[in-house]
Image (cartoon, rainbow, N blue to C red; front, side, top):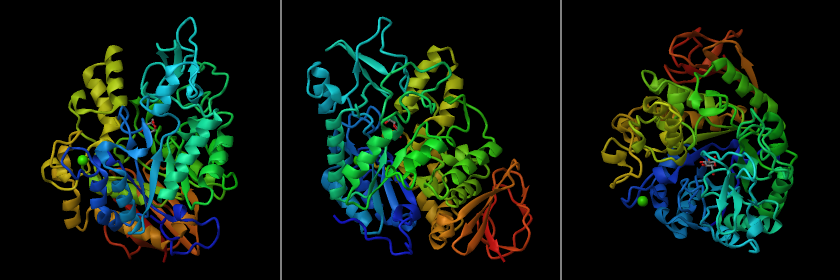
Length: 564
Ligand code: GLC
Ligand code: CA
């Protein structure tokens, strides 16, 4: 299978590439489309929606992990990097899907999880078998202390990050579930095996990788304790951007990507603008872009996702501006308002009640107007909302289930735990894609692995196709708008109205154009940006475009204007 031809439109300098100009659509295969009625989404299901994907005007599809996996963490625990999960299909199905997307001019990113593997991976099975195993050093083994674990590191999904293995009496590191042992990147053989595997994927026709928790690859060899006040993903934690991370990433680019027109976007917990410049700086030869978490932490209390506070728009503007300006001209941003680990964007940043349609469109306009590559998550183009999980029995996510158990053990009430879960659980993003108002939202003819959101009777692709004012049609207008205006890709960013608690406004300038972006992040009418001159609305989520810019933005009104 061939890589897609170089994009036809205007690539004028080496700094201009397909992954900067493209719009990415993220697919969570388990929940996208089930082709065989077993209740689990699959590759053939995705392929059956290739025309739909093309109709959205997206250029790149990112698939969450589709490799063989025991699914303790839905594919983020890989037991074979070169086979497809049985439930999702076969390698031939994957080749067919990639060909179907390439045939429509859409590139394909896979999700590579190499901070850890599954404990069922043959490498780990061998590693744990004895202290002298040739693969022993491919994972991180330490003797315990008298008090127990080798240090006080916590696992992301609860408990200690160390698991005592009775076979040898040593502990192995798992920064996530015990079924996800951390690979030892210090070992050159392991690194070579990873790079060779990546090359085989590129040879197969993949266009790039989303690198799972890439900031965690290099651990501080001191294995010091986390200090009081240091959270799991604090930038100073001893496994965030560790001493050899840059060396590993440069080596990876050279050994795995050389000769391919491929890209890498890193998921980067703990990254700051400063460390991002070192990871994705144009001259660094490391990653092409990364997902930062500062915006996703905006409603967390002390970095704890299960303790939430309202979003402060002024703070949100500060974070966005810091990243937009901090990387400008030196590195490249990735912009996202949700993914498979986050709640639904319309429920979190918008209003999934009265102004669901307006606010979902406003958020799309916002995300597609920033500098950097925009990422849209499946269902975001429909304005899909959080799920009304009634009890923990409705949930599937390991992180959510562990939190619920722990919170109740610590004395939190059931109602309060469920409130937090309904707001923040990753399962909100993982309920099936809503294709129609029929049974199981048209996702499957069988019983879906996680319940469909009952709002699918109202909110679904079929209904939105038929409604010219739908979020779906607006998404298409917005992707077209961005494609036609390179100022949105390469232009400068200037924040306006910094202290305004409702209006998020900014200017984008370059490529001979000047655009004013205004979004009312509230359910009240609010004053427009105070700017001299006459402006014409080019695109708006409410009323028509083409006219002058009214002085007031309606609730959740969003628009882009140009000098008249
Ligand atoms: C990343 C993934 C998440 C997964 C974790 C462990 O954060 O996005 O879904 O649970 O890594 O691999
Ligand atoms: Ca299936």
